[in-house]
Amino acid sequence: MTQTIMRPEAEPAGLMFRMLPTGMYAGRSSVLVERSYLVNKRAWLIIFSGFFETLFFLFGLGFGFGRMVGEVAGPGGTPISYVAFIAPALLAASAMNGSVYDATFNIFFKFKYSRLYDAMLATPLGPLDIAIGEITWALIRGALYAGGFLAVMLGMGLLTSPWALLALPAAILISFGFAAVGMACTTFMRSWQDFDYVQLALMPMFLFSSTFFPLSVYPEPLQVAIKCFPLYHAIEIMRGLCTGFVDPSMLGHLAYFAAMVAIGITISAKRLGKLLLS
Image 1 (spheres, helix red, strand yellow):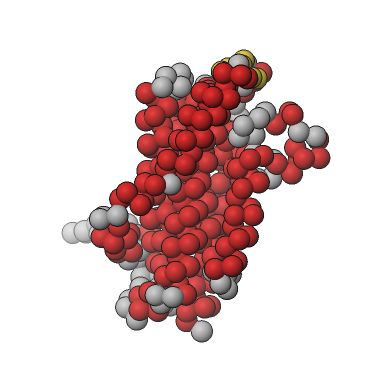
Image 2 (tube, rainbow, N blue to C red):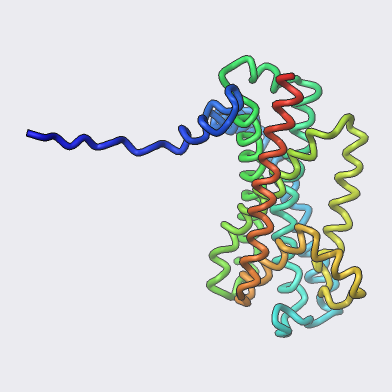
């Protein structure tokens, strides 16, 4: 009599354990998310304060400046109101702000001054656990900002396409990309003065990534530079989903952020391993 023995399915975490050097990953990054929640659960007003920044731009420029502008050319050249033009862009900026600020300032303080990660590495946690856990918390913050902004847009009647249902998942991917790259950049910073570079990068990107004006108003060389900005690709995704203008180029924009996630996590884990374990 023969008996068939069923092999257990391989667990994804087991593959990670085999691929990574010993001590890099313990599969417990969720405890960092839980810790961040416990630390911030009494400070939700501070957490959500950044959400209002883009909301003020929407009300101030959308209803104030928008009355002077009238209609502008939206995706595909279709005329849309100015407030409908800038709202998806501010949604993308909201997802960016929530994740970048958490993945840079907060992580730098934990890394350089509170020495939190040194204590964590005395436990079974590895550098990759820290990177994934902190990036996950940052993208959660960005997703909360984006979700709140989408609710405001829905209330204002600015979501007119069924494709807008995908705006929140897209915002999570955008937050993930900015959080991963933000944390990777933070591992190279030496002091608080280096954060001036963060503002130096974010402010021009916010102003020029077709946030308030169509890309066609810029000179051709500047258009090429703007197309390299991650916020430009985020805005193209959000503007297309919110207006229902979806075409194959959307896949290229999504691939841009998938690459940001992969590169950001890889660099963050390697840098944390080098800085904390060597």
